[in-house]
Image 1 (cartoon, helix red, strand yellow):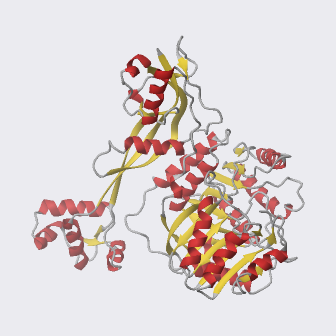
Image 2 (image 1 turned 45 degrees about the vertical axis):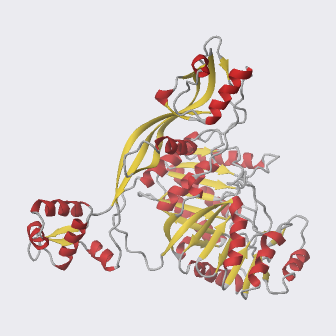
Image 3 (image 1 turned 180 degrees about the horizontal axis):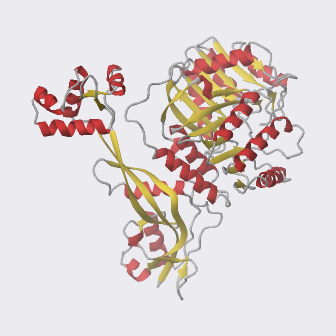
Length: 594
């Protein structure tokens, strides 16, 4: 008797990383050469260690760029300037890292959620069904498995088998294999408790129930995996030029990013403008032209839209029109006609050399007329790899997007395997070291409430719309903050739904006039950016309309925010808002979309 269990076979190369520090001998050698140049022999004499130990330490230090050979005034070993600056800044030597690759082949059981090593189970293609076998069908409406979802299962599989000091880093997914298979389970042996090593408790219980009752079990759809980037802090920097404010600045930055790309450009916009859309044509012609130039250079352009509010199919048709236009310029166009059901707005591209750039915020890149007060953040290099993970997770359910996801994974792999400097580069004068966290949809309102309780000097909430949730979402937290601090501001542009302007004013006055409520809308401009800042060190730039939206735990990727924490980071955004919004009338026409 054979029971066929639906499963996914996954095969890829895993990257394993080992980190270790420097020995006291190496640090002593380095400090000795800091005082005066010398040789391995002179260092050995000064430290009282065998010469071969000194030579081995010098060799390792030279390999990592901490010691160099100087010819003048005479040949000698000396500390490099980068190492000298690092030590004089009072920083210890960073850990060294070494990577190795290994092939991983696993089978994920769709009935009980087990993760098996390939050699532990018998699997066969879905079109090779033995006679008399009982078949558990693949679940209906199942989430498509991707490299991102399988990566967590690789981590689980390898967790107990790595060498001492090693950790799983990532999968090199550009050459991966993902196939549906059936696990062939021998029920005679299973009756005696002989299940493959790694079988989950859920699978064991399901098999026991089947053997007792004779009823065929049903596989449940997989729950979409929460991307690891949502729970992993990222150490980065933020400079003023990375804060992009205003429609014109967004259009110029898009052209800059797309013009620099040499490999891939990924765009996610909530909406898509039709080729004959007069309202959007002001800026979209420049967007389309930039994408056409990229395609002619051989860049692959991957386009997605997010809105599921498309009963008449206008965004799908507009995407089709844009696809036809771009394909007239070249073949490297993947314009996906199904929505990803997310309000996030993202552009990611390579930077033309060996790095990457990403823009996340409020701008609907494929529909905006670029005349509203938009707000986005540009991320670079290390943080871009996390954005690629995020983009892959958001677009995972689009069935036509496999090639685009492969391109995402290839760029992510290249960024994460990019050789890094052992010593940190000297930070730019305006680059502030910061910790970045990517905020999922249901995490926004708890963060706002926490900020309202933690703020000691100021709190500012910026939203495009004020709707029926505005009191509990915005005004209640703002009132909590206003009981302790003087500067509490709420900026918005338009009321939403049944809410009128007078309702918004009344809600703001409930706090006794302690909340400064500003409506940023005129014939020349409206506010479309969404942000939160408090005190001097924290900002959130997001696609989430604080005053009109709610969020579901079941749909974490509906909205995406970026939370930066670093000394004086909030001052950067506050200064921009004071210059562009708060202290002078807006200068541009205010068409916007949510």
